[in-house]
Image (cartoon, rainbow, N blue to C red):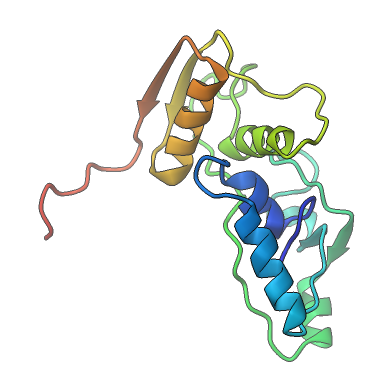
Length: 170
């Protein structure tokens, strides 16, 4: 299954990766190729259950319109390939974590990409005029830094939580 606009996995590609890193026309072109080859594409499908982290109380927005259990997939298909990225955020158990204004990347990034795609969104998380701290690195951390700068943040400071990689290959 691939995802198109307004779906879960396409959501990871289309809305999780900022436009400045990947043109969305690549997703559209590949989806059309797969359809032409006989692949059925189902959109807006959540695979799993609330215990998987995207149910009640989750900070990650679930835009799915349908839920399918892993058992349903096993019964319906001969093979199931798990090819999506992880949307389950890694929380930090630190004092003040529950304060207003602290958000997961997958709350922040998809909203900007939805707006870029022309979707209407109320209450968008924005960094305009704010001092932003990004905790974490990698692609997701740099995406948050870039999006915050594009919003017009007053300052952006990034803290890495993983050990510093070696200066030379080990």
